[in-house]
Amino acid sequence: MRTQTLLLIAGMMLVTYLPRALPAAFLEKIRPGARAKRFLEMIPYTAMAALIFPGILSADPQHWYVGLLGGGMAALLAAKKVPVALCVLGAVGVVLVCNLLLPA
Amino acid sequence: MTRRQQYAAGAKAGAPVIFGFLPVAIAFAIAAAQAGMPAGETIGMSAFVFAGASQMMAVSMLMQGAGAGTIIFATFILNLRHLMMSTCIFHRMKDGPLPARLLVAFGITDESFALFMTQPEQHSSIWFFFGLISVTWSSWVGGTAIGAAVSGLLPPLLAASLGIALYAMFVVLLVPHVQHNSKLGLLAIATGLCNLLLSQLIAPSWALIVSTLVCAAIGAFWVEPDPEEEVL
Image (tube, rainbow over all chains, first blue to last red; front, side, top):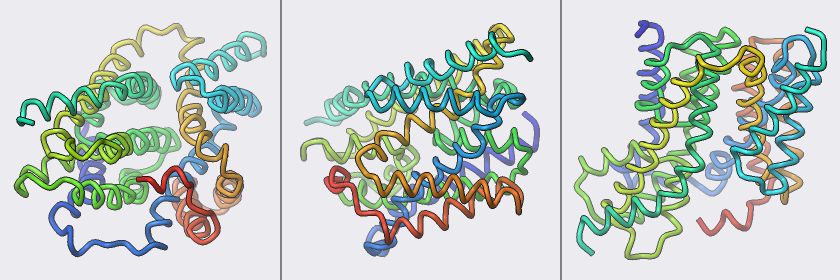
């Protein structure tokens, strides 16, 4: 394993494990207030939104709209409560069709 | 219930997560291979970090050329939410000495939290939780290994089309939450636009962290809690 990746994994493990383990050790002392709790609850949603956009525009390096079409398909299927794996496959299918039709 | 029965009941309760984790883990491993990570590193990351969203994020940040320090900081921000989940879990879990509690803390994820907190009272032991996370951890690491094994066998056109899988994953995770909560949906759109704007001004990996934190702070005051999540 490369040293750089080893450090990355070790660092990610540490910063992920600490918030998981601290309440086990200091249960009585950690009581986030209502507002802090709301803030922590919001983070996954805003993080996911920031991860999707604008990155999805470069999912296909040549055509920015291909990523949007794939993402749109995933959103449509997810809204119809289609299982996760099939939503992802649907998005991949749309991009695959685009790659077959569009000039490289 | 004996310890063995508690463990078995926990493992059984975790079974549905297998179907949720396997495809995501496979998609993660394929994305990691595209980012240039060897199979051993990819599987190692799943085994030791065990946090799907942040592993996905790490891979997409690696593809954007982000350094380890930035990725670790972004992981910390993203996984701060476990602080809240862990607090709830250990309030509910009445048994287990501290070392055992520190061990099972490693298995706290969005999924194990949601499953454990919605179980009947007799399933609140540490052995139940241990059974639960044994299943979730194994399916995450197993799925990653499967993905790493098949990633090299894919035809180039298909491999190129898989770049969308990671984004599709995030979309699928986000949609059910914003679907019935229009303010949360608007917040998500605002976050994306904020990230687009900021990434013109500062490095994209920092734009991601800043827009996540700023918009989460706005959301904490502006978005009403989801009534379904209040149950937890």
